[in-house]
Image 1 (cartoon, rainbow, N blue to C red):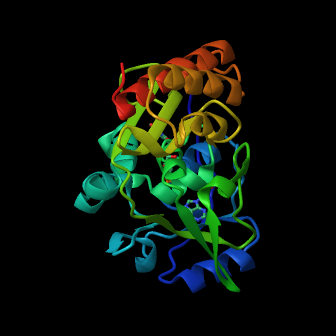
Image 2: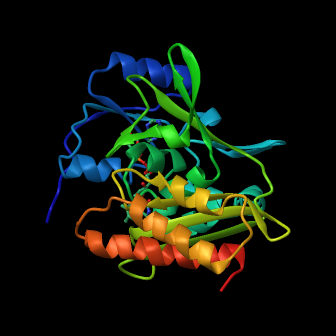
Length: 287
Ligand SMILES: Cc1cc2nc3c(=O)[nH]c(=O)nc-3n(C[C@H](O)[C@H](O)[C@H](O)COP(=O)(O)OP(=O)(O)OC[C@H]3O[C@@H](n4cnc5c(N)ncnc54)[C@H](O)[C@@H]3O)c2cc1C
C-alpha cells in the first residue's frame, strides 16, 4: 500500500521555551522527536497535524547524566545512545535489556525514550523497566516544571498526563541497590517485533528474604502496568518456590489483556503467568 504525507509546517526550535510557545500558538501542532511513531500515524491518518515541532536541537532534552543520587535521561535521547551508555548498563540494566529488544539499529538511532513514553502504547517497551524503577518524569510547560511518577503518567489507552502545551523534559531514576533483575519480552518473532507480553522484575534480597520487589508488564492492559498485588505476595518474605508460584498466579489475575493482531487475550494471560514465573525464578534464584 502507498501512503503519502500531507504537507505540514516544520519548526526546529533551539530552546524548550520556544518549543512550548510554538505548541501553544500553532493550533494543530505536535512535537516530533524520532518520528518513528508519529510519521506512521500521520501517513495512516491516525494523527492529523498542521505543524511539526522538532525537538532534536534542544540541547537540554538530550543526553544521559549521572547526577550522583539520580540518573537523568533527556526525553529526546535516542534509544541507541541509551543502549551504548555505560551509566545505563551499570545503573539501570533492566532499561538497557528492554531497549536492546526494541526495533532495529536504524529505528533505535531515530527513536527516543520520550517518544516511546508519550505515544503511550500498551506495548511501549521502555515502560516496564521505568515502572519497576519507579522513575519520575519531568514535564515542562509555560508555567514551569512539574514532576509525575511514571506510575501516574499513563492515564488510559494512548493517553498520558501531558497537558496542552506541555513537553516531556526528562526521565529521572533514583539510584538504588536493586541487586537482582530479570527481563523477558515475548514477540511473534525472536527480534524486531512488538511485544505480546514483556515482564520486568527487579528485587532487593537480604539473607534470602525479599526486602523489596517490583514487577511490571506491558501489552496486557490498556496501559503498561505494575503488578502490585503480586509484589505484596513476596515483599518481606523468605524466598520459596511456592510463593513465587503464588505471585505469578496473582499477576494472571491483575492483567486485562485484549485480542489483537499479535495475540489472543487468553494467550497473553497465560504468558503473563508463565513469563512472570520465569522472570521471578531467575531474579530470585529459585527453580
Ligand atoms: C519498524 C518499527 C519498529 C518498532 N519497534 C518497537 C519496539 O520494539 N518496541 C517499542 O516499544 N516500540 C517500537 N516502535 C515504536 C517507536 O519506534 C517507539 O515508540 C519510539 O520510541 C518512538 O519514539 P520517537 O522519538 O520516534 O517518537 P515520535 O514518533 O517522534 O513521537 C511519538 C509521540 O510522542 C510525542 N512526543 C515525542 N516526544 C515528546 C516529548 N518529549 N514531549 C511530549 N510529546 C512527545 C509526539 O508528539 C508523538 O505523539 C517501532 C516502530 C517502528 C516503525
